[in-house]
Image 1 (cartoon, helix red, strand yellow):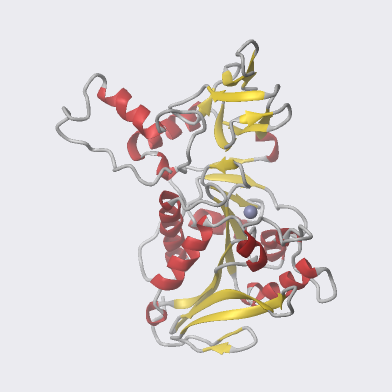
Image 2 (spheres, rainbow, N blue to C red; image 1 turned 135 degrees about the horizontal axis):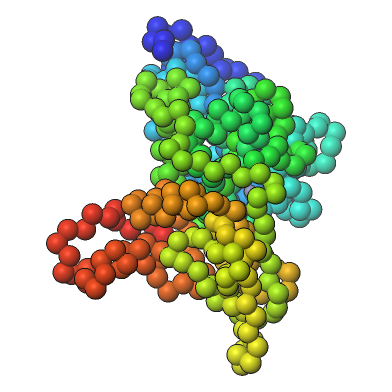
Length: 383
Ligand SMILES: [Zn+2]
């Protein structure tokens, strides 16, 4: 690692000198009133030479966990101790963020299908073009933070094209445990950037409209490892996670509702469903009819509906197949470290948090007051 003050200026359409941290509002378009749409950007340019990494959030305007991650990154890292550049794109979709909406309001453009953008395209493509040309294309590596869509929850996981060694290296440096493997849809920023030689991953964490500190902390720890791995900071790092499950397109399935009514989840304390067993029971208001939704295979639940009322065809759970070894690791992680290591989320229809179930099982009949020591980590923001 170099520490010889050989840093270079970072250029977008202005210049940030080595050793400088700059917070700016950058114009990417115009509102209906004709005033500028500006996105908050922080550029931390190290005194020493190194890779340029962008971290971005709120591509979908209601997915806000990542906004806190980016805010903390912008605050924590000191350009005097940095080799390379961190470009913090705090809120990509400002119109959606203002309205608490996923898409660019009124015409429902998906900003994350609009890259690399175009000068003469629709409003989404024009915004994408400015973001891409000014910031993304001037970086070497990227991490884009998302959450699940409204009314669903998701476990902490990464989406990345693992067939691209450069992208896989970024995913591993981020210590991604669960990776949904694939290039992504056309127009997605991570796909376009990765194809352009800027290996980029998407991190999915938690719920829209929520602040889930356990996941934010995990994201910050993993980013810190990534910064160390790529030499931006002079600290020890891991080259890959201790356990990883790379999930191919045919190894995951959306389980859908078979009836209309009220959903009671039937699994736990681990986020695992057993082949042929009930994932949930759906009942009508008089409980005259009950429908059991069965798991098609034994799998890890990585996503779930957050709303307990359903109709046929609606998503109940997103499940990834696992083998016995994966299962042992998942159970061990949950037992030893709690859910924050694989992703914390609230569990629809469960009266206790999974951690509490595990605690109770471990203690047997001992009540919490009677136990002499409590070796488990304190409950962290599972709300
Ligand atoms: Zn998203």
